[in-house]
Image (cartoon, rainbow, N blue to C red; front, top):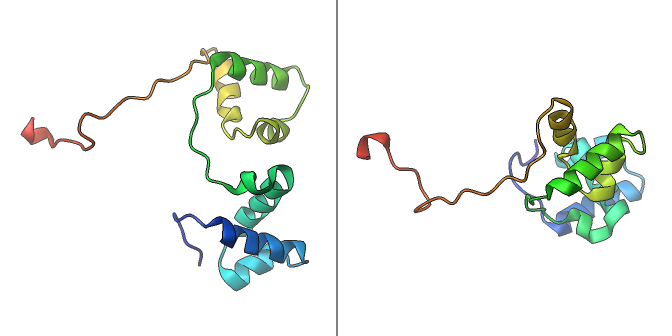
Length: 126
C-alpha cells in the first residue's frame, strides 16, 4: 500500500524512475514498493520531458485569459491533442478550460480570496 495523500521527495522519485529505466516495469515497482504504477509512469514521463524540474511540486498558478483562450483554440482547431498540450504548457487543467469554453462560459482568471485570520469561525460564535 502506498502513501496515500503524502508527497514523495525528489530523491525517492528519482529512485523509482531509475528502477523503471533499468528495466523494471511500473507494475513491478508498485508490487515491490507500494507506489502506484500510474504515478511512477507519470514521473518517468515528466522527467523525460522536463528533467528534474518536471518532478518538483507545482503550485497552482493563475493563468491569463488570453493564454487560456490560445490553448483552447489550439486544441479546437486540431493543431494538438489534449495530452500534448498538457505536456507542452505543463498545465494539467486544460481539459477544464476546453469544457468551460465549449459550454459557452468565459475563460476568466480567478482571484484568490484571502482568509481573515486563517481559520473558520463557528456559526454559533458569529
